[in-house]
Length: 69
Length: 250
Image 1 (cartoon, one colour):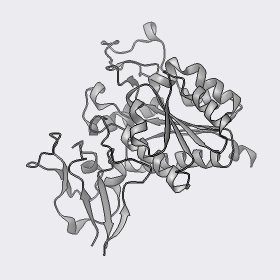
Image 2: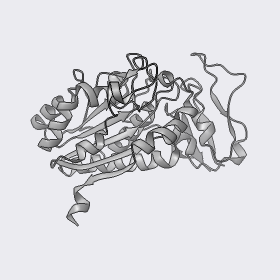
Image 3: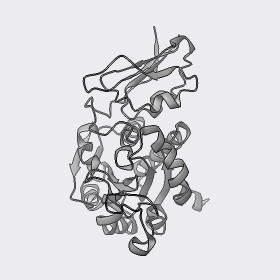
Image 4: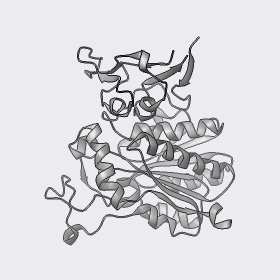
């Protein structure tokens, strides 16, 4: 199944992936803080992910890995 | 077994960048690194870091690197390329570095048709030193040295660097791109890869201007910054190919 993984320690919580996602299934975590004090991005519903890569292409920190199948 | 359709390129190190959240530098770094890797040039690549926010680019690119004096990256690149013609050389410069103090070096490198790639990251401001007005700061744009906004009477007009470079005969390929949304990022990748391909083929000077963001010094968040690029920068700095000798030859 298509899905993504966000490296929470690399993510700086800029939110560009949240804007880029056409399915609107990304958000900045309201509860998690990483070591640098940012709220990292997270996927709220992996089942809707189509592996379109929009989030990963937009991420300035290359924190997202995209998987298909 | 999951199939990976996107992951970090080997041309980027695992170091976490020092760039602010949402800074366009990270995107441009990735595009440059992926282009080099896709062309199989990892072992031949030599990067020239500028003075500015990208001064630490040598920590992030997995290839040989040299930091140049402020604005002098094209001069250093000229030396490296002439001594090692097999090297794939690129300079990675900001607008404060290239358009201001380094204006002479990049113009002469372009006029001489030096066979390397120059990436200009234009965010309209001096980022590292704290948001002063740059040659590319837009009319009316606020900076620490233009708190009322840039005025034409005092500071003149913003410099259109890509247009200026495109006038030189030695330039093989010159294009302005942006990284404000996914579609433009894909176009930017295509342009940067073409520039590197030209160098692999031994063709003259290749120049890519990338419209980028500086959320911190613009006083905007990452998403607002990307909108600002679209609404303010692109109308003044239009995107597109300004010179392509391959097309002219057809």
